[in-house]
Figure: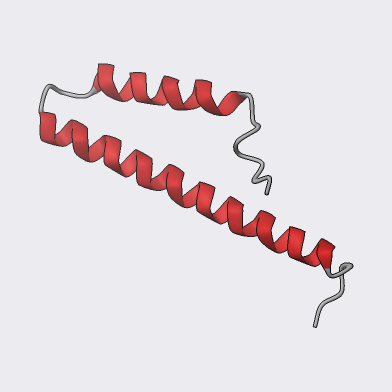
Length: 69
């Protein structure tokens, strides 16, 4: 299954850039840093999950010939 997120050449650069930004601009409070990284990971996971479902539904429609029940 292709989600459209794993083959994007910009995604790793964006992810690494965002993580570097979080690590270099966050105050030295460890708990605050962990909270921000965790929030970022949850947001990215939610977008990837939604993209995966969208792709799965598209593939299911193609397999049925584009017909809706």
